[in-house]
Length: 87
Image: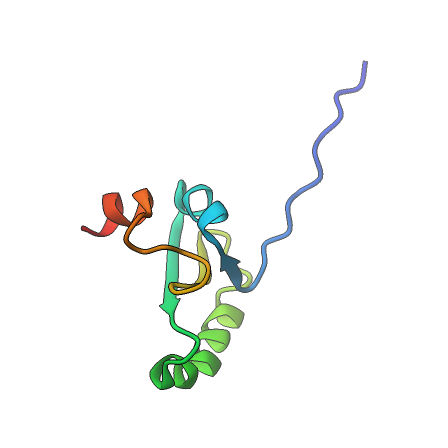
């Protein structure tokens, strides 16, 4: 009997995380995650550099680059992951 294998999951250059995907994403591995606000001029200025960083690490299987809208997609005050990992 032949054992079927799951197809390899393709690594994305830049992950756009949400409250639903954040905890699973950071569960293993190493990550650079940008927490941004869509109205923030500093965040807007960082966006091209963050995209470049994602391109540089796109072939590195040990590190992922991600971003998360801290206003719309992640409630920073209620996130267990943020509380556990960053406070």
